[in-house]
Length: 307
Image (cartoon, rainbow, N blue to C red; front, side, top):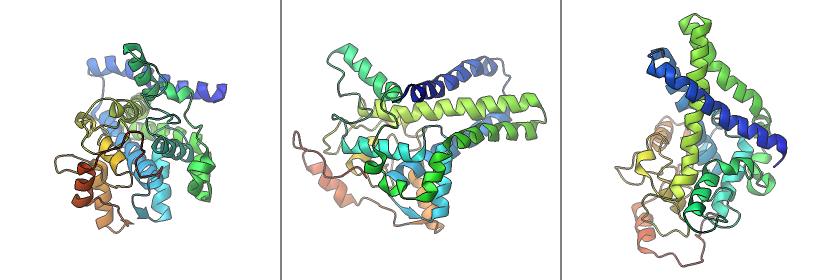
């Protein structure tokens, strides 16, 4: 990773955090408008669904098919989450699945950190934030994301990532200014719908990399450390059923039980009913039962590949 890439990534981590520190006293002193919180919620859902539906389940794992127009739309929304260009994101995540919790995984908390309490903390730090200044965006794009590299539209969206990031900050500011009719309302909307929103989307996504490979529940036979973390399920829009996902990577729905709320899976189902997506991959109860009754063999990787 180049020095410039490291600096950019550090800014992307530190600036939203500083915005949260600035926003806390405003919230405490009741200086936050309902409009700010509404803009925050809308921008959070748009950009987070862009990651969960677009970058992850659609583009990385091809859990369903859709039109190019909608595919590009979700790729743009995912780019607004400020987690890197779409092709780099997909390549990194497919590499993660190809080497989950083994040498080569870009953000495993279990590889190369030693033993003991200090090693645990070091591993969690690496998987949550540290990998952003060492591994992010370094996966071979031609090897792990050749389908996107060959897509002219995806190359264009990936190349214009900085402009999309700028737009993701200007949109809430403009919305706040128009609704509130002042520069102050534009500034607070930028703070909440822009930077604070980016902070929450970032850290909830990164918690899937760290916490969902360290603590939580497991029920399937997988040769990794993936877990389900129920209390992260709603803010992560269903991504925290991460052990289910590693057991069945191509599944469009990660919440495999009725009580496992998966908002992303629900939205995909609604899009399917509207005829906007099709060929939705679902996991039958029989396949789930087979995986429950099977046993992982030590040292043997799961049958699935990176996509």
